Image (cartoon, rainbow, N blue to C red; front, side, top):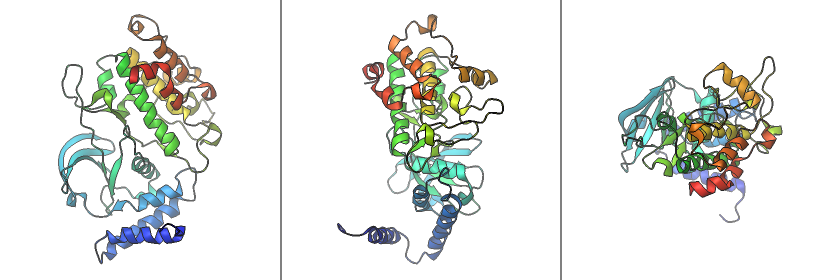
Length: 354
């Protein structure tokens, strides 16, 4: 196929996919064609919402049978407003995964947020990102996502954590400089991959969305792409970013994503994730947040960039390089704020994270 045209390659790929389906499964073909057509019709014309190519890709990865035909469902790992997450085991190779069963019945053809999250997770092929393996979509039944399983690590007392996230660890106190630098470097690497390879922003970075597995700080993973945003076209510079209402979580979101009075949020870009990582770094180093979390006060202080002073007893063991980096991340003006690439290359990060 070295000199084949794009059209010929497309036909070849479609035949390859068809060869993997059960012979004579006309219902599967009909379901797949229907969902693909509806999704493309509803989303593809709206370039700011979802990239057409990603929608077409997602529509080819949906399975229409019961996931229990392929996996054995195990214990519940957690529940929330979205639904529940269970451990599951592949019947073919015995590999364990996490299966997220949505609480509500979702029609992919009409649910932008769910489609956006799935698209990001399908393309999150990075060691520090949680990735989806398969999507199961059966009419009038909850959507099922099979994804990477992150086993819980241990807390500072050596006990297995009930919830394997960074916030659970920070509730016990600050991290040391090596641990803090590892969290910063790996989170920056993960989000930089989203920015540069997936043309997307996370938009809701916080300790709750950073998972800590058995490897502890040797390998962390970023998850929860529910507020993620995919952009088509020429990238995600501030001039090309979206105008929308507030995004993210109070206390972690960047000034440019917060509306003030009657003023709507203006244009913003990937530097909003840098600000959120700055808040996380401040918390890792000191054990407390730079702004009041889940409070109306955090909005006003964030808009002014008035974070708590990095002085006092809890900052005595924090390196000057770490403080410098935090200040560079928590800079109000996006143009002056450090980038994810610069964070990974920062001398303090490089000397402590590796």
